[in-house]
Image 1 (cartoon, rainbow, N blue to C red):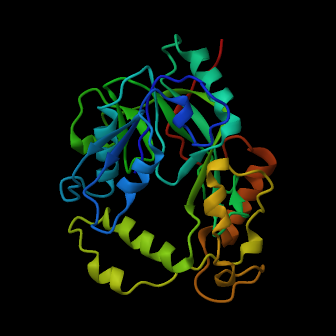
Image 2 (cartoon, rainbow, N blue to C red):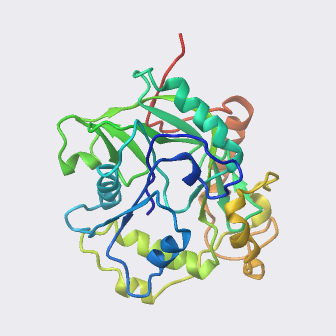
Image 3 (tube, rainbow, N blue to C red):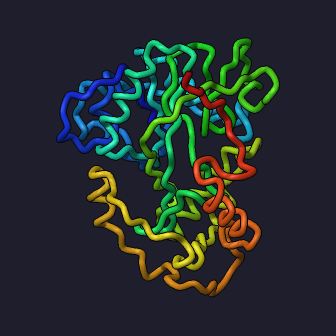
Length: 309
């Protein structure tokens, strides 16, 4: 998982490395990787003096039910300096066209300490690079990705978001009691989320590995041996993406080669329906699109929106 932080500035517009141009330092928490993992080699190839590595060990038993992800995020956070901390997960990318808006908003609220974080909009890609959700009820529309560099602000739950926790203990990662939602301001920028863009078999393997973080006994080896492909379902039921991808994604998009493993129709051919295919959620999504476009209907919001005076 990649953790990013720093004081924001805008030194060169030609860069296509997601948020690296925006930060003074880029802190990466590196877990005790598998022998075949090439993450360190990929990081070294970037060859940036901004990058700072923090080597860590994962203890899923001590941090169960996904809280190991929050704990590892906090490990990286403790090594960060600067006024604002910019957090990205490994499957999230920032578009270079949003750099200027991000810098502007950070400067706008720098001295307004009521604002504890900045709220981004989301684009969730599904199956391939041409289909994505932005307003489907099943997916979160907004999330906090920039926070104040304050010790009481911690990653929360399974590291999807953040909360203020004054009397911190590791049990608070999974609690509502004793935690407080951050007060945030909107930012006119998107997170491009590519976590569900994989060949079906690799997607299944990823989900099995990810699921092991939520098991107290951490016994996933047998499950990994009985993998089944993820069935993305009828792709034509997913909105087409008409925008432009971040430039840093160009090489990966050009390597897309599993179209023949996807179902490009509106008819399900096998297996269980994905959540976004079910009538209940399609109806709620329709209502949201018509009447609640900005923040959705019946959705959990892990933040308090700051209202300008």
